[in-house]
Length: 144
Image (cartoon, rainbow, N blue to C red; front, side, top):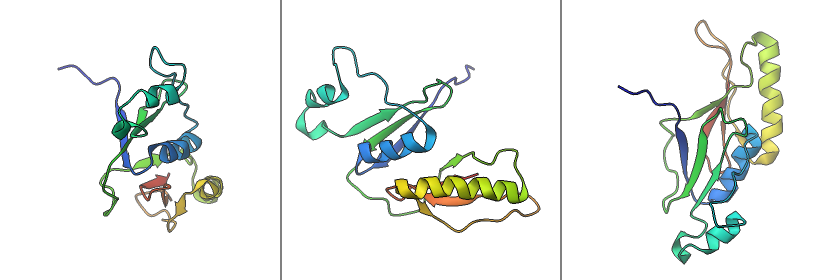
């Protein structure tokens, strides 16, 4: 059996460019070059049928290590909690007050971008502290 080497994370959303812009800022991702034959993504988008224009957007890890993120417009809004979410690893290897400070600092950076803070979950016998948040369309993620 072959092992998977790469994967993409897909976000259903109302405004793909807005959500992509948020996650680019969170993760330091970039917009990849447009498809062959197009000078810009706007040129590519204008080549699509009207109902497909603005229906998707992509960003990638500039180092090539992280997964590609794809944002696709869907007609329905988010109505329930995500079954899968991203953990943004800002406190890896940190414990106690040092970890809390890292989580709070990242939260302070993300809230002006449109993120919504949840209630801090403090460390217990099994887990380190983490901070649940929501992106600009209400998708849950954690600062971990």
